[in-house]
Image (cartoon, rainbow, N blue to C red; front, side, top):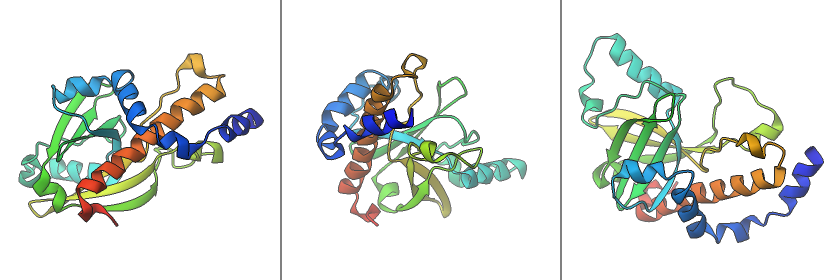
Length: 210
């Protein structure tokens, strides 16, 4: 299996694949990620990728709730970030960033919008590989973990950090479990589109370039 994996991987020219960014973006948006169109309710989708909520952010929200406080700062942008282990997504629409969280069955739970004012005052930094709930993983698995950038917003003096993935989340279809080549082709498209999101975001907001 390892030899098959290495053989299939060697056939992929990532530089050539990145040139297909626009094609792959439209393809994924029309198929596996078509739900984003519904959630955006007709608004333009310039770029999109997967996201996550850092453990620290989840704990911060829980602390506010535990203290019986209404978090005025965070409530100004409508945040209820309690579940840190379900899928989440970023969508760049014009100069706005849309952050979507889902519930345990994948339905939309929270829709948060950051406008130009918020983004121009945000910071972006590389944060390494996505930290998994179990905290460890094999070298083969590590290869497919997203690299994460932490974007931190200032919400009325409160720091709100959220994670941007360099690739779209990929849940392997059971019918593809033995097709290493097909899995790698799909993963490559997911990576190209995720990387493209970061590039488009930084091209509009140079303050996010480290």
